[in-house]
Length: 148
Image 1 (spheres, rainbow, N blue to C red):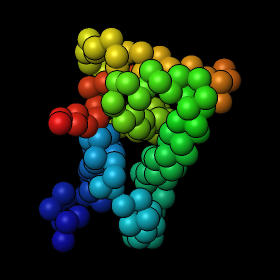
Image 2: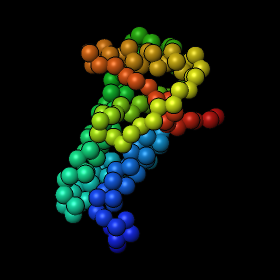
Image 3: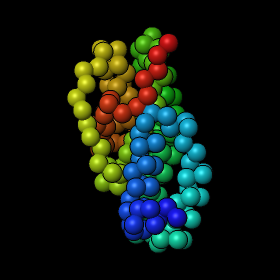
């Protein structure tokens, strides 16, 4: 029924990819049920083929890899920069994306407070230690702003 609304299967698949990316980039990634999304992508592949859905596999893998990376970075920061991170009182969880597989991500320049810039710098240095020859390009316009 949804395919008939979109007109073509390709448009439906493209819209699903964009909706998945929006949910994951919204900063409410704790509300994204990855196991459910993986099952859903598998069902969509059976119905529509792998073509337009291969990027979803990478997006879901990026989510899992990012969760693992967040834990690794937090452990590393606990040994070196943890006082800096804890005094800011900001829980930082990143979603590191493989940009060529995600829909276009628009980067907007935002001037962050110095405390957040310091946290980003510490996180980037820890990431570069774990993943040599790689770095992060931050997009602070995505995510969730937690207000007390």
